[in-house]
Length: 279
Length: 138
Ligand SMILES: [Fe+2]
Image 1 (tube, chains in turn orange, blue):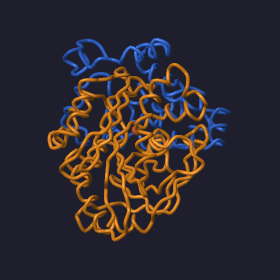
Image 2: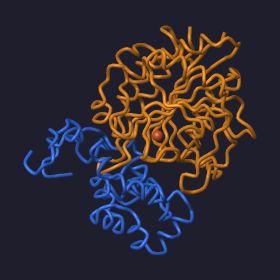
Image 3: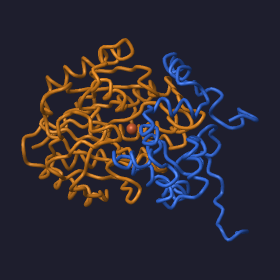
Image 4: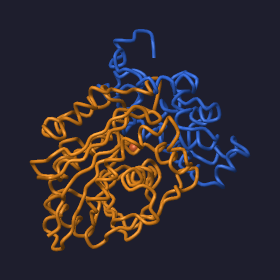
């Protein structure tokens, strides 16, 4: 049987990817961040998942405004890297797992989560930056990736509670797949940040730390945070954090926090990283 | 129902200062503006736009207000008129500028001041939670 063995929460700030792509990751501005990700990278190399479910959002790259799916599951066997306006990131293409993705869609829809099925899709920094942070710069990504894109750009994003419940349904779906697979699920985006208007640059470290604490100790409380609280307390773009609740929901009741890192800033963003193993 | 348009009651998030939440009404009003911005993902469109901004923008069904705000790079006005920051960033990239540059312009700081604020831990939410905390200000 396939199993979700762990979850990774991480920011996906585009400037992090750009710093690697432009050979700047050793500079004083970036070095502390990459140092902070070293344990997570080592964990990833040790854990060697067969499949990663990457919960992320597209930033007006794969989807423009013609169609805005709330939850979209990538069912292709390969996902090309998007040109976001300065050329595609020089990273390997992302290999999917269409058979397992098809199973996920079927199971999730019957569990009343109406996924949008996406058979062709380019992926942007929301998906590739977490891979870079956890896997470095290999010639090919070490595992297959199933993208799960969430609308967090046009208000309202799905609620935290909805996301948490979707995570639980994903766990159930994975456990009904009859193949020995180690699956790791990523929740990406955040943490506190705002990149629009006179309030841009907002960071709320106490909010972020409480969010990280809640992931291991009280996810039910986090699932109850209303959208307005994310916007007001942690910045207009911090609503991305609901995607971490899909990850948390997919881990079952008991988890052990095996790693945490927090750093300000990466561009306009407070960066967080947590690894939770299912127990 | 005064002018034939339904007026929604004000949403609670409109009380957050210095922020235009990209909600369904703003997305509706900004649709053609955002489609224009999306077109700048292609190198040939970036070139055409920079070659003749007035002509290129006239190909899109945005309002004259939106068009003028594009030509002026009036970032906050573009947010107010339904532009979304991730799409606006493509205009900044077309100008050879970064996200951080665009964000700094929105705050009225220089890019250097903005970067320094971030290095010091960012903008505190204190004083920025409600418009009632900022009478007469952004
Ligand atoms: Fe994002």
